[in-house]
Image (cartoon, rainbow, N blue to C red; front, top):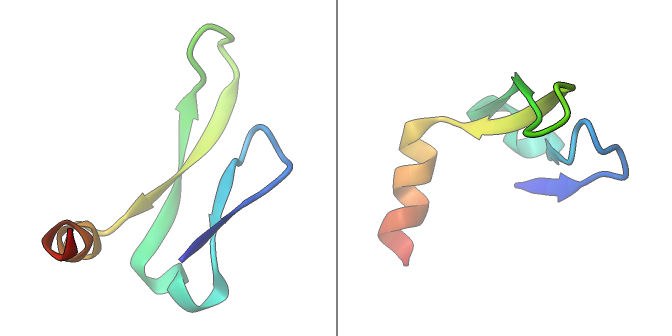
Length: 53
């Protein structure tokens, strides 16, 4: 559902087939005051993964 990139500002991106269930959110990196992007998943998707564990 996601893959790791070489870009330190965007560590993870959703795969093409999973873009409908997540989005990228701007955030401030701890300790550096730089803008980074986090991949966030819809609550229904994270709940599905939690139920499978």
